Length: 332
Ligand code: PBG
Image (cartoon, rainbow, N blue to C red; front, side, top):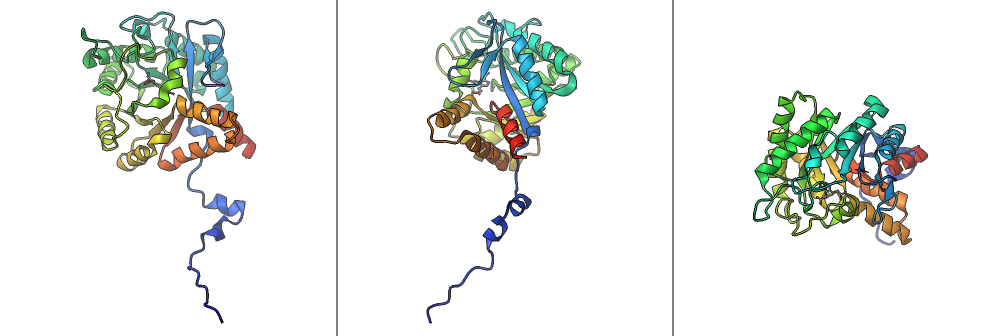
């Protein structure tokens, strides 16, 4: 007689045998209620225009952004985040806090159309509005002036809240931006307006397509003087703690796929609701992989986004939000 094979007591495959068993032990899930759709709205075009590097994503007009917002409601998406492309830029980015600015106009129009049916989030930054493309105002020597910039972020936030934003999302990575925005909102009577802090935002190569979509590439230099070094993980925890102390209601890590270790750390270290931004380059990468024939788009997108939830993200900002909702409906 040959040797007796010995099996371990535990047999994980026992619980993978049928769809019901697999469903019973599934630890994380993707649902429409955890998705936020980013949208670009432009004051410089008269018809919506597809972004060449992001097939299926458009620069919207005010009219078309309202239509997309209504589509989002119908799909069960709880919120959108608006990025504005103004019809004029200057050194200070002054159209960013103009009551008639593109984001403010779009916020009012979308609110009129959807009422309380959608959370309206406004990105609060200057790079789309400055002629030099940096996220803040510059000193005489061409550095981004931190303290002058956060005063402007505060003004932007107040005008966005007045136009109906539920949540202000500062993305410029200036020190003290959350505190400055919180106190300005409170002083202006917008105590109910929440802050979603891009708490750990890295200087990433994956923002490439966004810069085409939002027409905001820096005209000189780069953003490494304010965005985080991709090498750093512990530093992200300090950034998050600072934002929480300054009054952030929700925190976020950005980008997503290459930074899921940071998401996991953040989930373990703090109890704030945690989001992740699956950025333009991640969208472009999956779309290009599928177009080239190597990837099945639906399965790849569902898998990567499920991984973001598994790492600990409560909610995901993703250009795939609409597709994901349709696919989940098909599966149900
Ligand atoms: C800056 C901002 C950027 C993104 C969101 N807000 C670009 C940048 O920092 O260069 C990138 C989002 C994406 O790539 O999808 N206002």
